Image 1 (cartoon, rainbow, N blue to C red):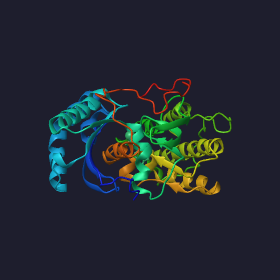
Image 2 (cartoon, helix red, strand yellow; image 1 turned 120 degrees about the horizontal axis):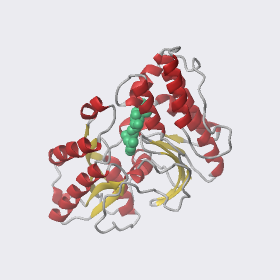
Image 3 (cartoon, rainbow, N blue to C red; image 1 turned 90 degrees about the vertical axis):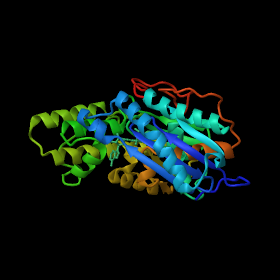
Image 4 (cartoon, rainbow, N blue to C red; image 1 turned 180 degrees about the vertical axis):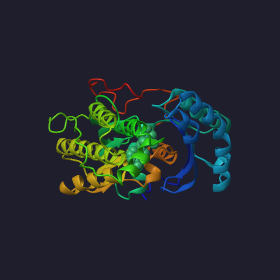
Length: 352
Ligand code: KG4
Ligand code: ZN
């Protein structure tokens, strides 16, 4: 574990509520997660085939307080003993973000602790350092989740340079939509991966948008449309469609990552984070790309890839160790780019 340079080991209480996972964690500066709880809302959203923002906010509001109590009790830590409270302040579904952030503010006020409003994407970006001893800056990060698909040069804590983003959909969103088209249920990514394991990835010819174009960005809308046509044709088994789709997404991610490696020769490692990093075909392809460029490949354990609160607490610990003061009275932000100076690209930024 990457112990941060601090005189005593600080402890942060992290809260995450930006999408459909309610999560709380107590994290220490030596990378120990003292206790954590993650409650998924799959059952609430399943009947709708996607995350319903209003239901998500209500579920966060119902669950957060008991989870906070449980985590403190399990770790044997009193709120007075934590050094700071960290809550996701965006980007995400703003109702849910407000529930977590306001809870964090109230706790911080009552216990007289600093409050860090954390960018959820920074949580993902720094999470590999929670588990990878010696992962230093700068590294190349592929952040692939339901709302994001970006390649980022992580130059230091709070220093992120966006190298590529999606011009339409995020990769995880494409997995979710394809799962819906195939009637595989919700959440989509794991369902598509399970179906793909039973299919032939070469059975259905599908496009690899932008591959070979020299353009650094991602695009998945055309691939999604091609999958819809394949489904409607009735010519293919769902497993073959799932396998062929997963292969196409994997090829796109690997190809764009290759371009980014060339654009960032100073990178010391290739790191992947976000929910889609839980996909084993994606991991294997990225590992091959990294090894072809003699770069170490770092993928956090699955639990840290999808949304969690340990990464939010950890991001605050990183900020404390880097001497970055928390913003006073942070507000919930539906959009919050990691690299505010990045040029907008066609269609991007539609999703939080
Ligand atoms: O990071 P995350 O938990 O939440 C966001 O911030 O978006 O990512 C969730 C996304 C969903 O789109 C989900 O379908 C996808 O990650 N995902 C997967 C897998 N597990 C989760 N996609 C492909 N294969 C998986 N095994
Ligand atoms: Zn996320």
